[in-house]
Image (cartoon, rainbow, N blue to C red; front, top):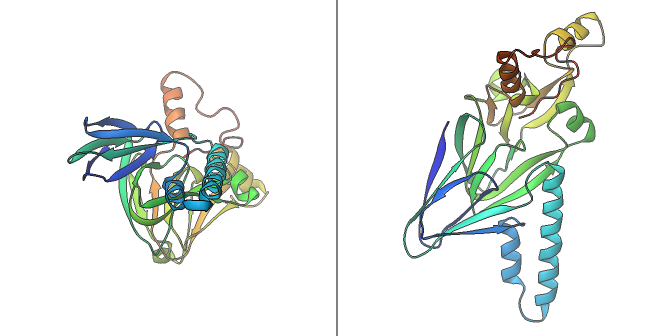
Length: 260
């Protein structure tokens, strides 16, 4: 299992998903907040006669972001780490055995990630929520939302197993993927969900005995896509089978939902 060891210059800040922190040096402060880094900027700008208005807007923005994260099934809080009085070190990791990747944002393209992929980011990177259509969210098994990262700086993501990098443009402009294997993709990639075959004999065979359920994720366009070779469901099924349990039950993957 990989981990990220981050060196911080004096005054530099990184934030992480609650539960992804491993260790830090003593000169690095830790603060837990509900809001993302953009909320702190709103507080700094609210001065003078507009101070109360600025604080109110900040509170509303924080509450909205916390509510969005709750809808995504994520922790309500972020942890912030700032180096004081010299260079500091902080360690982070994901929650499953697998790979990590540092994404460099230059301000031109956003990145989207499934809800369990985010580990940590520089304070210059803004965290947001991208809502998917209800049908896409229900069919894809990943919920209604994706995490969205904008701005400039480094974002660290993690996934299970090994990462697979590809560009749909190299494969005719479109690829079809197990819904639980999508980790992250660049802005410009269109994400959707389609049924596996029709509601005919072969389509039902795919769904019931193929172990993929009724849907596949579709990724279209020209941009970077990161997939993972292992899903939480696949790992859980393997452990259950090793302990003598049924792998998927008599219906195979028909009624199963994939988790990232």
